[in-house]
Image (cartoon, rainbow, N blue to C red; front, side, top):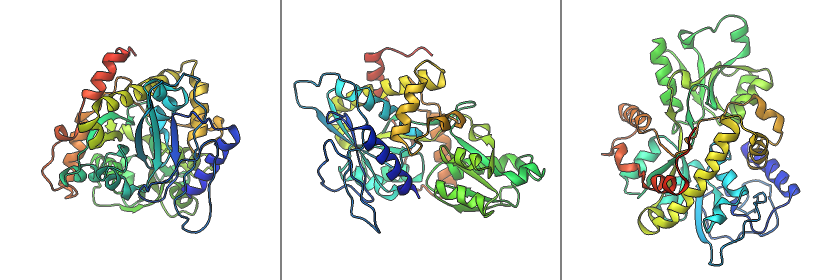
Length: 385
């Protein structure tokens, strides 16, 4: 289902026109990256059963910032689905911030199981990653990685992930509070994200820790499961959360921040090349990224005049091409000064250990590197919110 939505989004981008000087290119792939050329000035998506990975330039136009006279430094970024989490990168691409920093950034779609192998093998230089057991386990297996910048964090009033409850349960009065989670069938998107951690905290709050059934579904499949009555509750992020609500299937009952305020959900992770070999290139990437994050923060979270343009960028980079749908969405907090919540990471790691999902000797301090953000903030100045 995701690939279908992705195809529609890419086709939208093609119809809008693609710049040959785009600072950020998207390679659509279903497996670990292979050496493939990037198409310039064209978009192509191939359909069919188990298609071979095909490259596609699916980047919108960037500003006319003059490219540096020296060759651009290449940075390869691996990511999963195109979601709100990547907004800082999308904005940095469209507004030429990567080019300003002398960078040619390629963003490649990877299956979740391929992200850390690609980082460890050097096939990508950085990844956008969910905070889950795989992140910490990769570090214990000797993959040289560092969390260098934040992506989504769920704060009260600034959250893009929700507890959704089937509409009929709410309207009939059969679901009122956390205690009503008891006996329910609850959908989570992935066992290697913060979903199980958040659900555990909700069940602790309700005192019904062992009295639920959980199922793992892709986020678009959660909407279908609500439709056929296969689930009662789900932890679902945007944009699929609003899709479930828009079809009249479910209610956004609570933000996940109601249970765990300030939970760090996704982060930017650098691999060995940027951490140990070319730190200056890494610093330039984080600088451009933070400029994109700040534009998002000002336009969306601070309700600034730039909001329509940020929404327009999101319509080209995510599967949601209708700008009016963003009026119903929740948006996540992304720190404009690049601070990662180590308190949240520590609590999440403690949970993964308690569940036996992380067994190696690893601490949060070993996987967080704040130097890139510190350098970027020094160059940009501290953002006053």
